[in-house]
Length: 456
Image 1 (cartoon, rainbow, N blue to C red):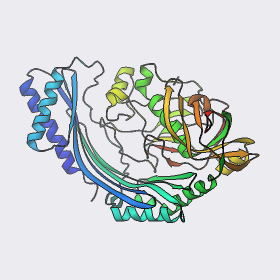
Image 2 (cartoon, rainbow, N blue to C red; image 1 turned 90 degrees about the vertical axis):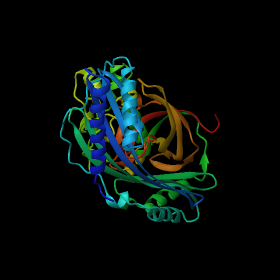
Image 3 (cartoon, helix red, strand yellow; image 1 turned 90 degrees about the horizontal axis):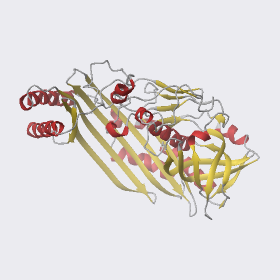
Image 4 (cartoon, rainbow, N blue to C red; image 1 turned 135 degrees about the horizontal axis):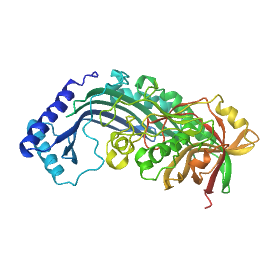
């Protein structure tokens, strides 16, 4: 299997031709526009629990998404039925639906022609990943625990996409991703590890398993800790969660236009140690070089040394703001808005061990879980720690603590003067919204507010 998208491009082009033909016949004198995206997705997942593989799941699906506008009245539909007859039915239905809608004040028109970057994040071996290959990574993860109970998954994900519009844009590309994510458990604790890459061959199940097992053993005996505000060293997974919420609720231009975002362009809102990019050109980046609207994705500096500089735009928000799209369109963006999909926090110079050594009393937090926003504009959220939370005293990890609930403004946590260190250990990390979106290092923060523990 290779990265050939010719069949998908023909499907998208046929849909555009049919929309123009049927639109002209059904709505004479009306202006009919459309964006069409054809995607084939091949997903394989191998799940394991109690140190045994218990499930292989695979799917290979082709889907077609149609967005049409009739005199500025928009409607959309999606289907996995791609025969000529089914395509005619879908086109007629979405054209009829569009005519029943009120005018869409934010419709920017069909996507115009634009050149697409040459970045390719596709690996044929990953696209061909089979259960046996994934199971070998599971075996290595499990064996690294030497008797501990392991659970998690290894997956491979390949997608091929072609885009066409009535305005003349054409774009095609393919991408792959592979992930190992799992835990090792003792009777009283769990430790986790996560790896993601565009290439299955980059994953090291044994190394991930060893890290998870060590964390589980280190946390096997723990104490309860009273709530309070403590200095913290956050691991990459925990940092990725903060950055994901910044991306969805902060640097999303729709949220900003509606007054729901914290971002004040040109203001020093974060610590000078913080520079955040949306960087599809990072060699580690996963995904296509164009967005859901067929627009090229381009690097954007969202925060430069603590100063908020830019937002992620799709064509809708750019039309409203008098700006240019950054390639931030995502499926369902009419309601969700534009989201940066390759968030990158630039690394610093310190190792996690050096950051821990500089803490008099605080916590080492591996991962955050079940995080929910309380106040989007303030970036105030609540959630739990999990899979390894450790007490630091006099620069050394002295033991594990039970999981804690936190209630914290992520904006305050990274405010000027609050970032004490940025790690050199940046990597793709899982920020709760899914793997492959955030690349980041560990962070040393002056304070994080914990509001409850095992005793309430």
